[in-house]
Length: 410
Image 1: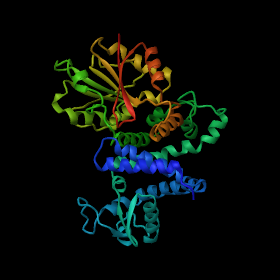
Image 2: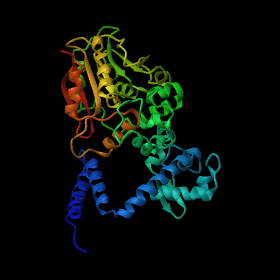
Image 3: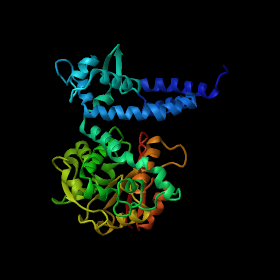
Image 4: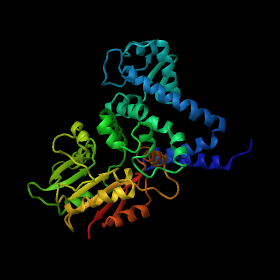
């Protein structure tokens, strides 16, 4: 068998990145994962790819979904004494099955665990014995559970309708948030968009969506981290210290996780009020914690909080077409103080080449649910300019796929 120069190149890079990862070099984990994925993609055969994508991944998802119903991941995490605080021990299938709820046949639990082990979601530690991975343990948390339930129970039908939808749409991307695979699959085509459907027809789906967004924001560089956006220099310094001054309004902020994390980082150094805004039905179920005010607000209407230091939009612009985004941005202008107020857009800005799978998969989901998309830097600047605003800077973190676009009025 002849040597493959691509494999040789990738193996050499993986070896070097492995040493960098062991030495704790910043970004080594991400580069190592990317190189390992490239090696896997180069080595796998076409038939193996077909079986992996069409057999292994769908059944893996099905096992995880059933596992939530029978509380399999809670059963995995408990040891024989029921102590959930210590690292879980390896357990037999019968012991795990005995703690499922509702009680599930041990033979079925064993088959589920074997596939979860084959896919890396649990660890097979010996014959008929298993232990959870960090991912399996995370599946006991409400936001992870809600993410799975949203994707599999609420969103999956949109993807299954792609062939019919695009056939009827002349194989063109949807041009309206009212006419998408999601609205087609959920019987509201042409009548209401994705978020309106949450409020009118499916509040539980809205809660699950908020949980998924919370998971999505975890374990990623936050916009206020050192080396990302200089919060102290560009926001805290020069901010009003008046008793009722508003420091930051999180526009369309969902459950409030961004504000929670900002408050955890800066504590009493935040000079002013923090306000969480979203649709009334979303804000109603949000529990952002002490120090954060809640307000129902439609971001297409004029901003009621005047003169804030910052209006922050995280993963908002990506959800809408240019015309709608221009309306969203213009609704903030009457509330802004020239030379003082900033708008911060925290979003993916995609490269022209070499986009990451997180960016490309989310781009497909945006198209499917809202007829929306990610933008290049040039497209982002053009849209902001059309709204009558000016980009003052684009800030990136070396470990982040998204960026912060800072905007002011002239």
